[in-house]
Length: 231
Ligand code: HEM
Image (cartoon, rainbow, N blue to C red; front, side, top):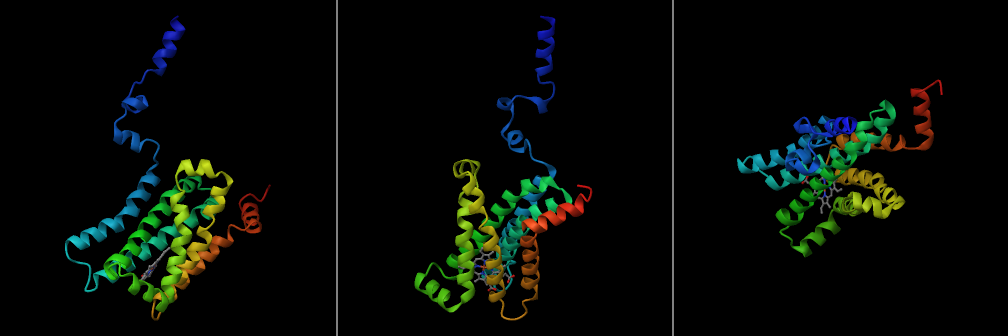
């Protein structure tokens, strides 16, 4: 009897952090389980969006606001996608397992900025004038590359929930490998959109090639041997 009382008292919540799930506030439930790194990634990913809203509200979007929004959202999207691609290789190199939990938010925020990027082009730039949009697609090759990257990323964003992960099983991983194709195509889109100096997209392109090479089994084995020479 005394023993069961003791066990019961051990299980009784003593601090607000050990309340049963039903007694947690919505904010506590939302925050529960998030590491400081995850919180930092969410904040950092939302900052460019808030910055754009701030600049918009203060009429500070440069002399060409549409171009400014298109370029900013495109750049932020590609950086987030590259960071998403970098998580696995960095984990392999340094054993930072926490990075695995960042792939989904980074990919989804990347897709969020791509959606803003495309919405700016279709709505603000072309006013949903489809004949004009089709004409632009025919005339500017980089639009077709951008569209291809978007089409490849769409199934990833749509199946990013745990429910889809369960339903698709092994196919989920296969579908999510489309990112290996989408990001290089997006980099080609970026390079072709520039009229002259393409050194920056070439630099990011080289980085992406390196990150993709690090996923090859032979290179993975070589890195594992470097990290654990005794094995
Ligand atoms: C995965 C999809 C995409 C990504 C990651 C992406 C990314 C980018 C990047 C990084 C730039 C260059 C920004 C800069 O100059 O700093 C750019 C430019 C541009 N993108 Fe995309 N893009 C994507 C899809 C699209 C699509 C589907 C369209 C149109 C339907 C589009 C329209 C444009 C336009 C018009 C520009 C040129 C902006 C300018 O310099 O005037 N993009 N994009």
